[in-house]
Image (tube, rainbow, N blue to C red):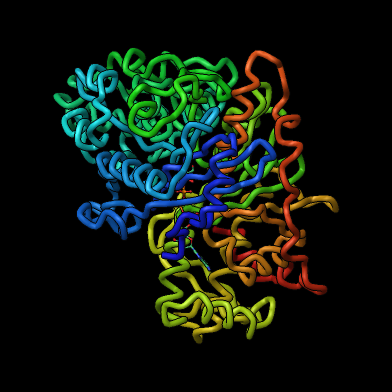
Length: 539
Ligand SMILES: Nc1ncnc2c1ncn2[C@@H]1O[C@H](COP(=O)(O)OP(=O)(O)O)[C@@H](O)[C@H]1O
Ligand SMILES: O=C(CO)[C@@H](O)[C@H](O)COP(=O)(O)O
């Protein structure tokens, strides 16, 4: 995987001295394939970036793409202790590189959305009395009632989804209440499955966290509340009233409210950092922890999305999200509480066949090389000579479909394409599907629309060119593809201003403007308006 493997800041003594003087905020991201961190100074410049990749750096857990897919092909989990150990590794790396933790004013973070962590009765006691002489994973071994946590790729809860929708008067009613119809990966349905299949483990659970609030709890040394924005991905939170829905809680599992704790606004300071981090790493005792949120909401903050813009995140999952003034819940897509403005909302579409699907086609048709993959995109024409393809090796979320579907220029389904055609078909098909589903939510590209791209695949300019051509809009990136980490530092700075009513936009006004990286090629509308797009519309 082509993530960052070395700390970005140079190890020279000059760089270390410069770093030593920099007051900063840290932003964390506990995402599907790795834990990442960035440090941002008071001028909002990123001066440190690092990551730990689960498959490569924690091989003993045997994950692929950060997860275990179970025999049924539907259940997908990640070991909770792998996440804890990744945090230990990255903190030790920072310490070894001379990172000056005493300058950290505040920190916040993000987590892959929907995944859940089950803290065993008594874990709270362990969290509050951690010894600075030991690593976190050495002390938290016995703290979880479920060691393999369900994550967003799980699609094993169809039965629980139907039960939840039935309990509240149907899919539309659930969507009006919580922002989404029942989705298999949404946490309420995952909790219901655990309660039904493993009632003993459920009864021994004193607290249930999202991945985001779990990570915040490690820094806090006590249970962090769930924030409104990530809490919107659970099918449990009433997104307008910002309280748990009693009907949904009751339909999922008993005594759930006490295990979840009260949700809080996303910009809340949830407490000072735990003494463990002060004593072991030298954080100042007054360093603030700002509520962690979902990785997509954190990216919205990191990209400083404005109304009318569209964000496309090309991480393990592909997601597309927008800023919304008013919630417009529908049967497709999700409405979340906005992570930076408590009055507003965001819309999100999630596509499961993102980077891992692109990697498969890269391995099959480009000898495993992104540069070969790019050459194929450069050597083929926009519109792909009328050939179109849709590739869903795992059950897609938007829409629910599986399999590879290729159509020739004559609109006949075919079984294979030449290698270069296959690669362009994949990328054009992925972006056409995103555009069509965004339009179904009411989104229209306007003359001043900017597309803000992020995530691992946003390193690839040839992929971004296809994005510009398919959407007919310019594509911008921010300085790092880690927008969830950067957004977390911005949210931490916002937290420092808590109580002053300072709007988020004011906090981030010094941040560097996004950079233009691709504009639509003249004539690109033929890609968008090809008649085979109707095939895509039917998906
Ligand atoms: N040059 C590249 N071209 C296309 N995809 C890339 C490139 N470099 C990295 N990626 C993709 O980025 C993915 C990781 O994205 P990232 O946003 O870091 O993931 P996550 O945050 O979900 O862990 C990898 O799975 C890889 O397929
Ligand atoms: O399920 C969703 C959003 O609803 C995913 O987007 C997860 O939040 C995982 O994010 P990445 O690790 O792919 O960034």
